[in-house]
Length: 390
Ligand SMILES: *Cc1c(COP(=O)(O)O)cnc(C)c1O
Image (cartoon, rainbow, N blue to C red; front, side, top):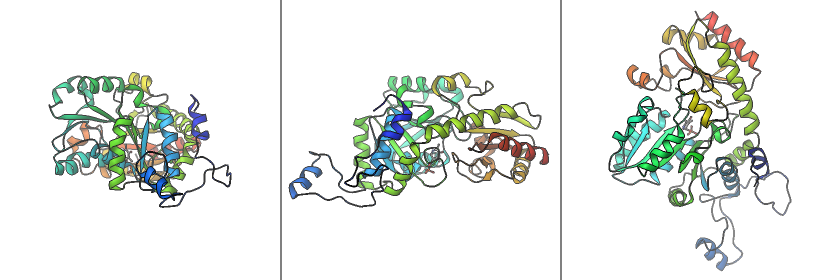
């Protein structure tokens, strides 16, 4: 293994088959054979390493896991069928009835549903802390608090949590620190460096990067991953070999793509900052971002998502979206194609105005996932839509 992300992401690959292929094949097989009854016994007993059944592991999922572990600096991992299976599995595998989760309020919508609607069914409760008030989070820790669950940058508010602080806080209170690292991708930020015990991903976003397949990852310390493997092996959230193959291939270009996502996003954010039709432009690497210094400390670049708070509320935001000619209207992000979403009327429409305000979503806020088109075309499309939606 190299110390460089670029080299690992293209050179880590499954051992060659008897065909001596150069590019990893797709191992579409549900199970694997043994040469003898003894080999089967020893493999099941974990005395020798070997594939058994694709619900447990498969060469394509192992390839993906190895590449992402190398990038994240994590010891072990498990690949899941979607990002949400990873979020669910990271909590379900490690907590028990009666345990409590402290979480940052700004969470992906379905993660919020897990914590507030799904886990309470099994006696696992949670409390939210506001990122702006993190110096007071000590008060939110209960005797049964076992986990700190955070997401940074957050979706869609782009709030940044200080990972160094989170690592120390988790250590002081003996909590398992779980970080959803989806928005930054393993290329821009490695939470394990700051003390995260578990890192989760929706690989659907930047790791795929081309809007094709769903996938997720749970990565982390070997002792915790043992519990995750047990849980996953017997509950079955595993990724399909085909999707794992796509995602492992995508890891080869993640760095190149992220460089362009980030430079495009910074250029677009910079261009529109100060536009009289926009109340605020938010991007982690703009100096005006409230947590700019923290973003600089823990991310190598600002990521591919920006938000524009348009004057004129819901109607203006919707008119703006309808005037866009190139940028796609869809719920995904991290795609090669630029995407617009209006959280207040779509992903976060179930929240009250106050709840939305608490996570930084105003009525006129639009989220732009900046793609790989030439930045001049992205700027042109956005500018035209701003002007014609007044
Ligand atoms: C999309 C997303 C998820 C969920 O991932 P899926 O692959 O859609 O299941 C979780 N967290 C964040 C931050 C996301 O953006």
